[in-house]
Image (cartoon, rainbow, N blue to C red; front, side, top):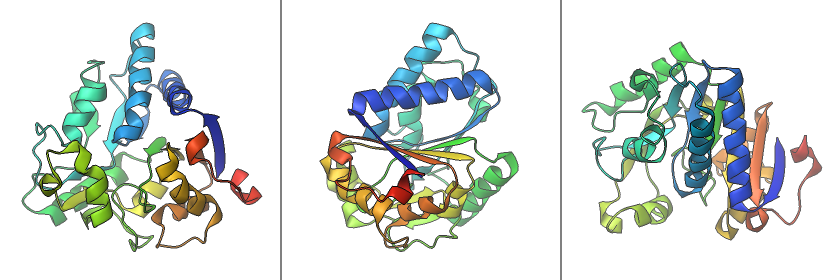
Length: 249
């Protein structure tokens, strides 16, 4: 794992957008694992700018989103399907819709849907670059503390802290779904490369535990220390006060 403080969220967002741009440029049939949330907005904005200015062909790019809320239709303004189209796919409208994969939050049988999505990842993968954020409690995807490291795509009961953190995207806290379909930790770990972004002082504790703490399901993100190719990009506020040197290699 390599951790780099790029100074500001804006600079880090642009840097990672360039990483994705060059992946698409050099490997036009890439498989990208995508994340949502406030952390990613700037990065996707820069990626749209780069794709637009350079008129890059993305018709053979295949994307796989980490998760989706259970019970939200794709057109719901708080669904991750809606987010991805508003933030990326509709702003650079040359992606092939058949290659844009998200869990179906409206599936009647969430177990079957989880199995379908996991099989899709197995059949179409491995993912070349997986983008991640991190929750204040150390979750990645919607894999909350206690999630087994060998977990595959599954239906998750969201913790109160995650519901509270995500309530800003809804009219009120009571509107936040209590469950989501998420890639599992082992699903994420199959990616060839992982890039994690974290900004702000409220993420500092999670990043400190990620790079310096014990590898434990209590902090799900710590599993990333066992992956051979992980980059963590932070701003000044999220940078730990101390870095274990083993986290830099």
